Image (tube, rainbow, N blue to C red; front, side, top):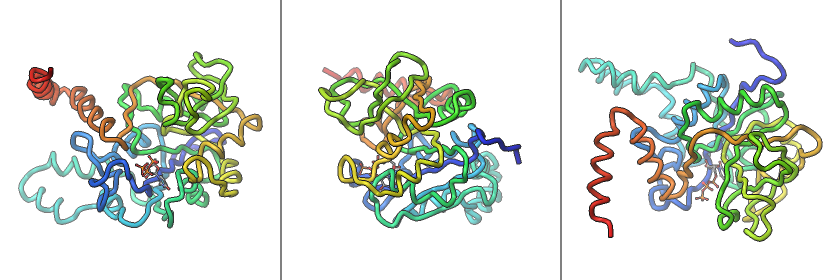
Amino acid sequence: MATTSTHQVRTAVLPVAGFGTRFLPATKAMAKEMLTVVDKPLIQYAVEEALAAGIERFVLVTGRGKQAIEDHFDLAYELTATLKARGKDAAVAEITDFLPPPGAIHYVRQREALGLGHAVWCARELAGDGPFAVISPDDLVLAETPCLKQMVEAHAALGGNLVGVMDVPREQTDRYGILSTPNESDRTPTVEGLVEKPTPAEAPSTLSIIGRYILMPEVFEALGQHERGAGNEIQLTDAMAKLIGRQPFHGLRFEGERFDCGTKDGWLSANIAFSLADPDRRAATEATLRRFAANLD
Ligand code: UTP
């Protein structure tokens, strides 16, 4: 196991207990985080991104109806044996290579979907006593250097709390957590305030938080107050806001493109972008796109 320091980020919390109501009916009986982009479920992308960032402990906050997620990170004995018997070694590798070491994944249940902040709070006993990462699996980032790796590297220099940020159109600020910052155009803007889903008129900037965070454990004190925020949910943004001024707090303008796969449009765009980015799939995807584009008005 790697040596640890107070700044090292070893744990990632992955909340997967939401209802995914924006993706019904697909999410009626299936976890949103098992939606596939090209050929992999969203939760696998998230775990692979965390592994690439050096994460050693994974805490998945699950709920009822999310059993398929645990099965995805287990061995599939019958399938593996069948594939082996048929000499399909590449397929065996596809279903086993992404698995973190035995015992590295922990599951905790959020009994009620009271919001992202509450889901993170449910992981408090497993998150450790140093900085920890939070990944929202439905936020998928296509990047040369995986997004969380970029964040862990930036965090090693900055310490404290760090959130992944990107510019959004002003008319969309009411969909996101928005930063108040004196240096909006910097690569690592200082966070002076955080507002969840402000109206375009009230938004202090157009810099939005995405589902990548590195947080100090003190956030659990604020989350433990169970205060309701936007949408009557316990918001992570509101708890983070209470750390501002007490600890260093920055945004990171990550390199890459983020897709909100919790929406149908975001998920469709992600499928196209990830398929085009795969050298084995690019030509076929271009041909498909050309065929559809030819029929557009
Ligand atoms: P979202 O707000 O996008 O997820 O949360 P949602 O509530 O499932 O989706 P909609 O708005 O109804 O369509 C981002 C992440 O946080 C998890 C979700 O599973 C998702 O991965 N989450 C959200 C929880 O684990 N618990 C919650 O109470 C809310």
